[in-house]
Length: 96
Image 1 (cartoon, one colour):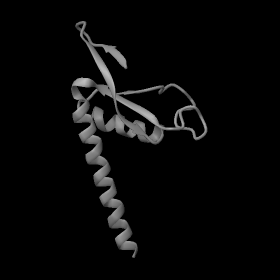
Image 2 (tube, rainbow, N blue to C red):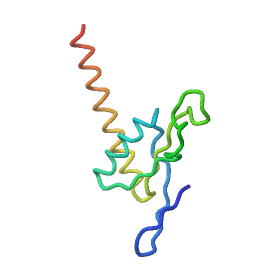
Image 3 (spheres, helix red, strand yellow):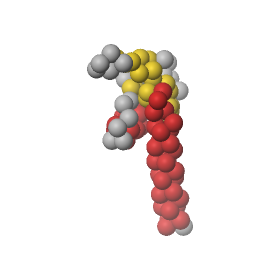
Image 4 (tube, helix red, strand yellow):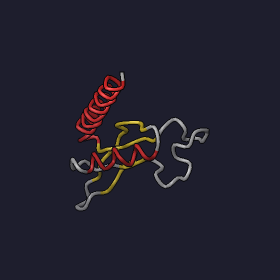
């Protein structure tokens, strides 16, 4: 687990809240969580191999949030994915 020092000496314990499919999705979700005032770390963000199929990181990109906000972060991501799935279903119905 990652730790980040806050101003004033308090440290947050970061926990994994989601595994993004790739770095693009991870960056989008990072922005979504930041816009909801949830600090985010993307594990191995600096690596050029993150999310590249066949790399050591090919299983996804871990998204980390403070343990005190982990459930809220998971809910925000779940709500986003549900709305995205609903939009895809509507698009398929229009194409039929």
